Each structure stands twice: as structure tokens, then as C-alpha cells.
Image (cartoon, rainbow, N blue to C red; front, side, top):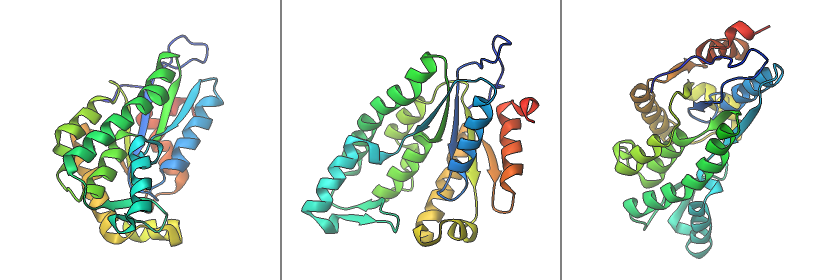
Length: 229
């Protein structure tokens, strides 16, 4: 997906409404960097909306919660409490349910703020949803499915897409007891890499890079580095 420069529209502190979307494995720094960017822009008079979209906010999550109560063995949960695998559900049916569940959230949390003139910074968005659904279904090719393509088509044009990555050792150091299993992280990183290349996102490896250096690179990618300081 083509990156457009993050420019000011009227010279009085108002930025052109657009989406900056982070994606990558948990522990790569998405939350930290999204908050830093929101604070940086907000301090300069830019109207910002932070967005966080994941399956736990959807109808699909309610269905999973019911499945866990009625048939505990049908749902595998991560150390952090997130759903990782489901059994006994058709992949296509579940993917459609996820797509239908995510659509109103995208409209309300991303498109509506954009229409109102805000810059939306998403620490989790549709790329993360696709990767999560793929692992839940045990489908390593889900990112090429019709449902995944429909989700990607909902990403606004001229969005800034930033792929944050880190190796497993550093992720476990950062997340501690909430670290996901290594096979889950390997699956995630491989699919994030494919989607990152397909969407032509900016990739930043945060394994050894200091938080401040990562943030400077994000400002450069977003086209606001000249406003730093």
C-alpha cells in the first residue's frame, strides 16, 4: 500500500485526516509507539483518535465466550487469556463471522473519526485481525483468502502502515509470564512479514533498537520528523 506523506493542511496546527496503523506481534512495541505518536501530535494541536480493534470487541468473541462455557475443550487459550485455537467450527463460516463482526468497529472507530477530521492512530487494526484469525483457524494461507482480502480492502487509502517486529527472546523478556508460545509467535511473524511486503509497509525491527530511536524512525516514516523537538 502506497505511503503518502503526513502533511499539514492549513498551517495552523491541523493535520490532514488519515490513519497511521501499527501491526506486529505482541511485545514488539505497538502500544508504546502508538501512545508516543498520539502525544507528539496532540501536543502540536492535532486532533488524534487512538483506535484498538481486535476480535475480543466483536460478536465473534461473544460466540467464543459461549463456546468456552458450553464446551471448554473446543477453545485453546493463551497465557494472557486470549483465544488461540478453536475446534469444531468451519473455517469459512468463522471467517465470515469475524468479517461481519469487525466491519461496524472499523466504521465507528476509524472511518467516523477520519470523517470528523481526526488523525487515527491504530495500535491494532485489520492486519492484526487477519493474523489472529489465521492462527485461530490453523490456516497458514488465510491471508490470501477472500475474507482476508475484503478486510484489507477496508484499510483507508493513503494510510501509513508500520510493521513493528522483534525476535522471540526479546518478546519474552518484555512480556514475561504473558508471553505467547513460540509456535504462535513464529506463525505470527511469518504472516506479518508476508502481509508487510504485500502492503509495502514500513518495517522496523525493535529487537535491539531503543524506544526513542524507533520513535524517531516512525516520525520519519509518517512524515512528521520535522516537527520533532
